[in-house]
Length: 278
Image (cartoon, rainbow, N blue to C red; front, side, top):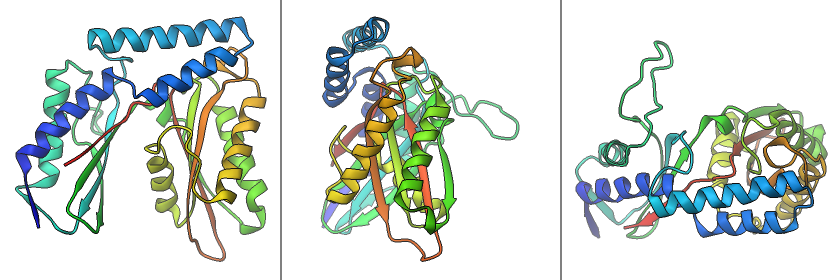
C-alpha cells in the first residue's frame, strides 16, 4: 500500500494550476511551429508567429498565456493500493484555490443562477477513476470558455454511421468559426451514453497532441476529420489558410444498438494542460 498526505496533493495541484497558465507543453509549441512553417497564407503565418512569441513571453515572464485562465477540469487516476490521508477532493480544490491566488490568475467561476463570482476559481470539475496499482496521477486542464462554449453533443441514429459522425464534427468546428481562437484541438467522444460521450471528448484532450488513437480504424477517422476541417479554409483566428485544427483526438466506448452519441469538445490553440504522478 502507498500512503499519500492530502497536503502533498494540494502542493502538487497548486503548482499545476500556475504552470498550466504560463508554460505550454512542448507538444503544443512543436505543433504551432510546424503549422507556421507549412502555412501559405501570409496573414495566418504572421498570426502563428505571434502566438508562438506570446507563448515564449508568457513562459519567460511567468504570466498567463491568455487572460482567460479557465475553469479547472481535473482528471484523477488513483491506484487501488493508494491511501489518501485526508480529503482528496478538498485537497485538489485547495490546490487550485491557492494556485490561482498566488499566481494572480483570473477567477472566472461563478454561480450559474446568480452569476456571482466565487472569487476563488473553485469549485473545479473533478473526474475520478480507480485503477490497479499504487500511483496517483493528476491531470489538470484549465478550460477557457471561448472554446468550451463551441462544444456540442448529438444523439445520432445508428443509420448515420461514420459518415454522419464525421459530418457532425466538421460542421461543429465550421460553425464555431473564430470563436475558439483557432488553430484548435478537437476532442471527440463516440459511443457510450449522453454523459459518457461528453466525458470521452474532454478526456481525449489530455492525450499527447497528435498521437493517433491506438485503434487503426479510429485513427483513420481522426485523420479524415482533420483533413476535412483544414480543407474548409477557415484557418488561424478565422483568417484563412490550412491550419484550422492542430489535431483531432477521438475516444470511443461501446454503446446501445439503437444509439450513436457523438460529443465534440473544442480546445483553443493554447491547449493548456499539465499532469503529475505521485
